[in-house]
Structures are given as C-alpha cells and as structure tokens.
Length: 304
Ligand SMILES: [Zn+2]
Image 1 (tube, protein in one colour):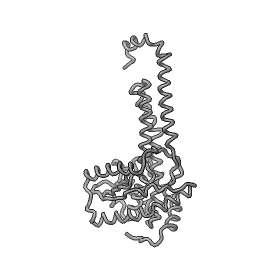
Image 2 (cartoon, rainbow, N blue to C red; image 1 turned 90 degrees about the vertical axis):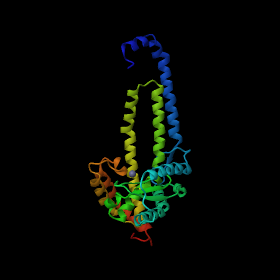
Image 3 (cartoon, rainbow, N blue to C red; image 1 turned 60 degrees about the vertical axis):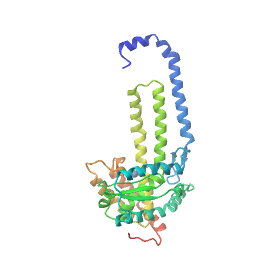
Image 4 (cartoon, protein in one colour; image 1 turned 180 degrees about the horizontal axis):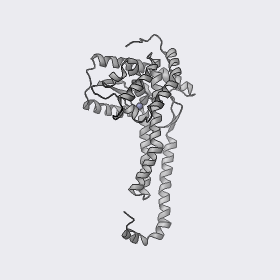
C-alpha cells in the first residue's frame, strides 16, 4: 500500500533521511528489542529436572500463580461442560487412577533427575490435584498447570482398560509437571517482543506475518512436538511406576490414531504429525518403563 505512486512521491523528499538518520534509527530500535529479547531469554533459562534440558520459564511465575491460572481455566471449562457425578463408578475409577499416578510423581521426578545429574525440584508438591470426568464424545483428557485434570468419557471406549487410561492421564500430568504451559507463556512473550520490534521498526503487516509464519514453522511447532515427546516419556514412567502396564501404550496410540482418522485430532496428537514415530519412540522407551515398574511398583494394588 505504501508503494503507490503518491506514497513514493511523498517519501521522495525524505529519501535521504530514511537512508541516514531514519535508517539508523530503525536499526537502533531493532537492536534495542533484540537486547531486550536476549536478556529475557538468558535470564529466564533453567534446567528441567525431568528431562535435563534447558527450558525458558519466566522466573517471576511461581506455583501459586500457575495454580491460579489453571484453576480459572478449569472452572470455566467445567461450567461449560457436563461433569459426571463424582460419586459415579466411572468418576471413582478415574480418580483412583489419578491418585496412583500422583503418588509416584516424587519418586519418578527424583529418578529422572538423577539420570540427568539434576536435583529434583518437587515443584508439583504445591499443586492442588483434582480430576473430573466430563460427559463428551471426544477422546480427550487434560491436566492444567497446578494439577486440575479432566477425562472425557469419549476416551474410555478407545482406551478400553485402566492401563491405557493411565497412559493418557500420565501424559497429561506430565505436561503440568514439565510446566509446558509456563514454557508456552514465555515463548509467547518472546514472540510479542518480536512483533513489537517488527511494528516499531516499520515492517508492514505482510512482512510481520511472514516473520511470524517462519517462526511458527521453524521454531514453535517443533517445540510443541518436543513437548509431546517429553510428556509421552514422563507419563509412561509414571504409569509404570504406579503399577500400570506401560505396554498398553502402543495399542492405545494405534487405536487413538484410527479413532481420530478424518476428524480433528485431540490435543495429544494434534502436534504429532506422525503417529508412527510416536509409537516407535514408545517402543524404544519400553525397557526403561519396565525397569521403572520393577523398581517402583511395590505393594500397590495392580487392578482397578
Ligand atoms: Zn500432550
């Protein structure tokens, strides 16, 4: 739009200044934002004890704030959906699966942290865990920051057994333990800094869109996929430590894949373009999961 003839004419008198003073000014703005973004990035890096990987989480975001954000979203979702009576048999069974998984969070965190030469942080000890079953055709489940969970009834016929439900819930719990929500918030902040830099330096809307698309494909989407892979691993270890059969994970994801065929995929597969890769990863993790089962599944009730 700015390239129309009248715009060029109008800008002609400023051409010298654009190349000189304004051109420099634009680079100074970009540099300022780059320094700001860089400082934010460097000062909020930490090592995640579950994975041993460096992650970006805003240091000012503590467990209480995460819990408050999670609770707010949870109440909103529950008010819009149809939660089952908590005394119903299904709700009690799901709650029992959650209880067994949560009981193993500390030992699994300590074991994974030790494997990565890290100290466990036990961030989730402050969580207020809760689980509801929501009446819905969706084969889905979630765990929000702070430990508020839901399982949709549509998941149960696809899961077919308690072991597979535990694999899905373990995956969702792992997202909360790994603070993936907080990591996404930090990513969004960096993205906003990028957008502000783009706008302040005079990029037009199309250039800004192209920059955001490049970031999305090149950085944010692979990042989301790596979160899914991490949640698969930590969730599988939790399920195994809680005496569930981790081997149910493979047929579960095969059923999930065929159940979601042609429809919008649920949360836990939407960022996974290739279900075959996921199954291969899970198969590779199976010896470790069986080892966790042997180490940590002692005396707990096996059947639900
Ligand atoms: Zn997921």
